[in-house]
Image 1: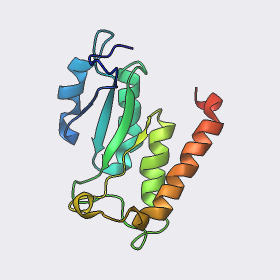
Image 2 (image 1 turned 30 degrees about the vertical axis):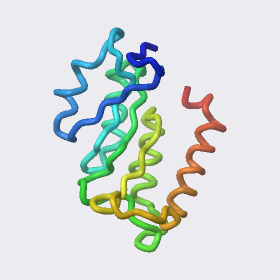
Image 3 (image 1 turned 180 degrees about the vertical axis):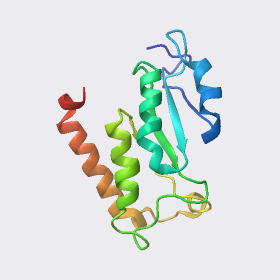
Length: 144
């Protein structure tokens, strides 16, 4: 893997939902210093399809993740609004892993990302993430 920084850190690229093709396509290839794409997926129900597309187009060389789920004003709701998180758990978290993605960044929407001071308000969500990660680690050979 190539890195273009002294610290050998991964370099991912993020863009708007409608600009993925235009931005990511020129960055693909063996000589690219880029190591992944961080997708904003809107609607978030398309997470599997979009993650799978960029994993395949990069020949599985990129780590592809989902960092904004849906419209910028909407994000992962607090447990008090949706303790089960069924839709995001199924259509973002598990869909990303099962499409070959490297994971998700939990986005809380606008202005949720700016005013989040107590991450315990998402305790159930973090537990679901931990469960998914444990499952993927324990069964990695199935998905290799």
